[in-house]
Image (cartoon, rainbow, N blue to C red; front, side):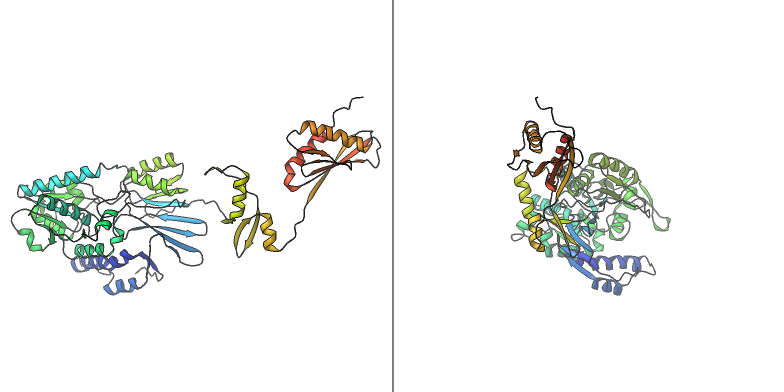
Length: 518
């Protein structure tokens, strides 16, 4: 529909689940809501033909310049953060992620990739969640108390993520307490999602992977598929129904049936967008205007217990610290809360942080850099010659830069000469220093030697048989002036390696020699 005809990159679980979710979305939009000009089932099939599946941490070369890499996001099965790199510039787009491991997935992880820009979600920009154990205990207590008094519990969830998390939690509790109250989940979508969790077990957390051979945690003994006629059955029950915000579908249908009984309870385990029925009841609204201007009075108990798979403020800060980006851009959040988080990121990490409005363009300056490969031999030599370098402190490295096929390498001069088949030539610089001295050249040279010997105690100063003086690679010779017999010319020459010392000696000799004793 948008006219894109290139490849679409997904993780393997996303590739498996995506067409099912898209078809479900299409059915709700077209068959139930009657929307026209929507994508068709054939379009979904054509779209999936363009998909290229990628593994986590696999570097994929899209073309000559563009490469991508996927990192585990821990949000739902198959969720990934992507690094997009062109040359030396890179952007990391997190999508939704969770930095806390739960009962079925591990925590998001990214290496110290130091991108130019990190685009991160900020759903819970100012929230720091309480202990997960406390939340689970409260959740189980409320569910148990409700069914004990004969009430029904509705838990609106999305097909992936919290549904599996809470199913595992209730399954374990029901088994431990030997409870017989029925638990149901929405047929179709959630059932298929559970099938894919079994299939891609390697994407789950360590505990589930370890116990998988003895028992598959996604094969629920106490949780059965739901039939819409069950909603009218007498007695207690627990139902997981989609979608998670009570804005349509089976969860809304069940809510309307059960809302009028104060013995019943609805537990909202995740974030609800403003305008949805879920958001309204969490805001305290107890009289809801439904379709056809019917007013629904909500007498059932309403509880919010955050089992959201989004990172909280602590998790977002943790990810920024882990990736070490040059700049951060916040998306998917509420403006006031994002502003607070933006200031905190800028203060703690000393990087620019942006929070553009929808549709706004942000232009970021980047420092041009040229990647250079450094030979191991050169690095080893530098390590031997000096102390170990500090991780974040710049250090000068001398070598020869070789460019070949648009790539650069820094190697030692000896290696460069060998690779290029060149002979070594030594370049010397010579500077003339004029001295007022009527003595013979040999005596002037001896005076220079004595002066330098007493001044440069940390250097090797020698007086050679031919009358010249050396300091390291520096050669100093005294000669007569061609026009002035009372002036001597000192020829100071050095190689480029001793540039600093040569300049120092030249300046020292220009100041003259100490008077010789008469």
